[in-house]
Image (spheres, rainbow over the protein chains, first blue to last red):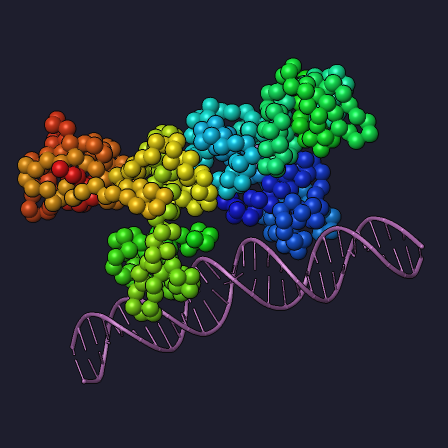
Length: 220
Length: 220
DNA sequence: AAATAAAATTAGATGAATCTAAAAATAAAA
DNA sequence: TTTTATTTTTAGATTCATCTAATTTTATTT
Ligand SMILES: [Mn+2]
Ligand SMILES: [Mn+2]
Ligand SMILES: [Mn+2]
Ligand SMILES: [Mn+2]
């Protein structure tokens, strides 16, 4: 595992995420979109990552992450999520404030640091957004989770994660009282626009839009 | 205060340190030595820093840090030292292990992060090596400190800082039992080679070399 | 299947930050 | 005060990461 630049780490993370944990192929444009950059820059970086065998790349055919690329990506993701836990649990940040800072902290190179940080935090298994934290070997267990939007009428669930980490979305959840661990019950579904009415913690009745319902993930 | 690159921040810190808190002029070679780089690279960077008015630079005449440069340098130093405290106090690192990691962490850009970190640590005034931590405005108080080498025979002092942060030096101090806060008394001085015999905490007798005596700082 | 649209790559530039080698300025020695 | 040595700067390359514009490949429509 050679030492990668910030840019290389960011690209690997993007490829990993867009491919759904490294399964499917990813398009150049999708990466450009995700990374707020231009397709030409992506092509160039993919060529370089390919030379280092961090991705499997055939021109015009999309890209897949390689085994060693996946390993690197997962370590960066591990660091990102551990730092997010630190920021929320120890420094009292709100969950909508931590992503940007973790984007910087995830590139700090020190295996010992991350080991100690993990100890200090008590080996958390999930980050403040409900995303699983890979261990030193890149392994992790996903909680079974489905979007509220797909829960049946009268079905219940506990909020375990959010799909989007956009600060505005997270702030909105705060405002209406949805948080990780909240108990939900679907009390009405509107076919027409995908919105629904839910009961949170058996006491707060809420109307939520389709967008919200698709981005809040629950488990039974 | 514009956002600076890692390299720019590192150069500013070097100029600040080498000039003794921004007083005297600094030579190109001194900077190159300190930063493990070539004089040509330094000249080039000084030109760029000068254009941004972070340093006052006249070709062939050495360089001084400007007021705005000093402000930036002190913020980086503040971050460096706060992170060092975090690593030692919270993550249980030894004082010889933290400098390298802090060299990376000091470049994380988030005023809120550093404010929260400072709160979390209880607003420490000194880092694990006894160096003062500047506040948000770049202000700090230095403890009066003199090298053990300059203490008179039979004189006493409390160890308040170390001049060098080389891991080997710090590990050696650990090994012989010198630490911040240790009470020292000079019980013999050898004119010939500058070495001395000291009594630590009224119970451990130690012989220390001139090099050690010059790099351990005490206060009365 | 040919024409058109979309996606991806290449060509060529640019800005940091670095380097080596050569030239210029300053300092030290004879 | 010349000469020599040292220090510093410039000139010219290189690597990384990015961009715009042009070209090529692949996909979609007539
Ligand atoms: Mn995040
Ligand atoms: Mn997260
Ligand atoms: Mn340090
Ligand atoms: Mn320190």
